[in-house]
Length: 589
Image 1 (cartoon, rainbow, N blue to C red):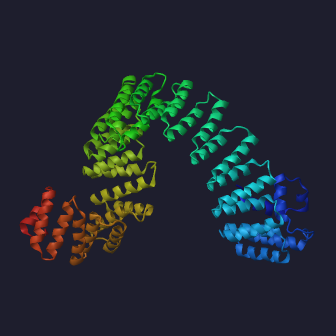
Image 2 (image 1 turned 30 degrees about the vertical axis):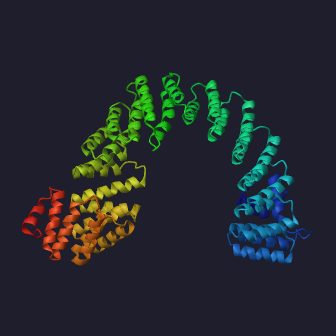
Image 3 (image 1 turned 135 degrees about the vertical axis):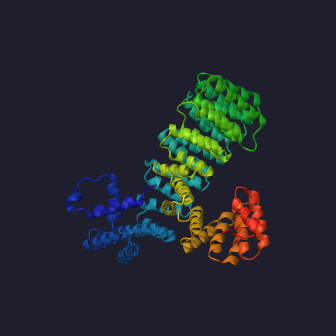
């Protein structure tokens, strides 16, 4: 479709021309644009300086976006000259911009009443109808435009598209047939007609169209792919297999041909043929490792789905082992093996294979990151710390490597190393703001643990600049401010906001309860700590139970307090201070 805004700029430029400018040679498009706008009326008053000035003023208001003023001016012109089709057209455009499509259609139809063959008026009307969802009406308008401008092929395409949107598929096919007669056989046309025939469930019609492509160039393998897809999508697997085999006759190592044929075999229940084709392909030296991996990836993805079978799992093992045999020690072959194990949830096996991969030279960073992710997911933080150190020797400027090392060091309570890791990572080229946010949050937490409060506050503030609604930043910042007994009012506001952003998070509920505790609001603190305890479900926290006991003690419920201190100690025996509270049945000094 046309961009009517660009047409407006042309029109204004034409109006602004001097007499010398008008004497210059104009293109066909410029003449059409000039005709569409400067013919301010259908009579011999078009050259009237007064009316021309009024029209220019109205156009200026329109271009400046002063639509209400422009509407008033164009209506004033129409009042003086009720047959002024150009003014109606401009009103049609304005109402179109304002998305007042009924008024836009009314004015454009009036413009066409006085100049029915105007290309620009018809195009605007078609666009208005399309915006209103009247695709059949828009198609009719494009039909009118095509009758006036039979050599403009794009209008035929527009009409066919609108007919397809109106679900008039047969009529759309007829228009594409008309285009084909004018332009000759084109792949784009055939594909469009194929899709329309499929909408009509006319498989034979779709096949005939694709067959025309095949007849025009029998050596073009893509055409057999189109044919195979038609049959495969309609459950005619034997015909699909026959079509895909034609691809491999032309190109025996065509990756998509191999995968498509194998997939059709599998859908047809021909499991032996399916397995045999893939194994032979993988043993074929003419098919490179990258192509073999390309065939294997969708099979791996399918295997991870709920409807996968043990037979497919065995086939994956065979194919990956062929790769390892043909390409011993190859990073790509090893990575495929690890990816298969990972996709099947065999995390420990995948970790060991990824370790073998990263022991090779020139391993992609993505493989290292996959290993880091698995080690983190399985909570193997000693190994994560070890392998991030090794990975940083290969990728000393990768920010994500520093993030994982900071994470591992934090879990291992090596806070100085964690702080250095986050600080260094933040100086690197971070791929996303989300990663920057995580690293700033980590740096804030670690700096708080190290009592480096200036750095902690600076990190949290920078994190909140990235995302003022990050619940974890708001909670952590509030919690450490509470522990420091600084800016308690702000800590309370941040903690409350974090609980509004994320409901029933036990850590966030605990923070708010702990702030209220430090403010001396013990009864209110009890309500929130009880919410936190309830929200823990099957993942109890020693810290929350410890806080629960302290709040209960302040409310003179000593037996209950001791009970929860004991529960906290059972969960985390490293909290020696709890032993003293339990022994004294009192808070520590």
